[in-house]
Image (tube, rainbow, N blue to C red; front, side, top):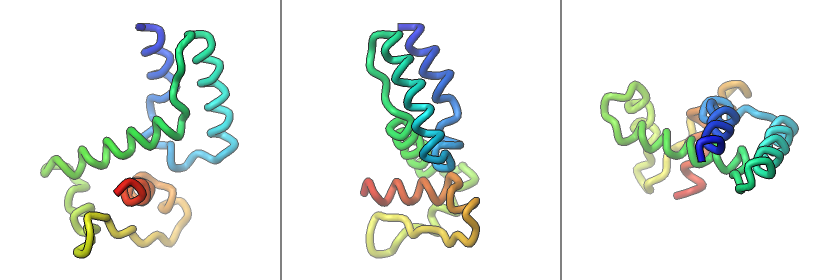
Length: 112
């Protein structure tokens, strides 16, 4: 349905960029909005966490698959020599720890 696509894209447009830095309170507010949208549309919609996790993993896999991506070298430097997991990058600041790359590596490793 076109209206479903429009609502979902409006709410979840930048989820890859900001999903790892959203506080639990903000996430709950967004989930309530999605729940209301779901009842108006009459079809179930995934939560912010579910959509964020799916899209972050897809983006990370896309980066790993494309040799010309600027983060390709950084991700290959994080590959473990013992398993197919990625070594978590060192984070001294909370701001960096909640950014895309460390959050994506944590998520990727939890799904290995």
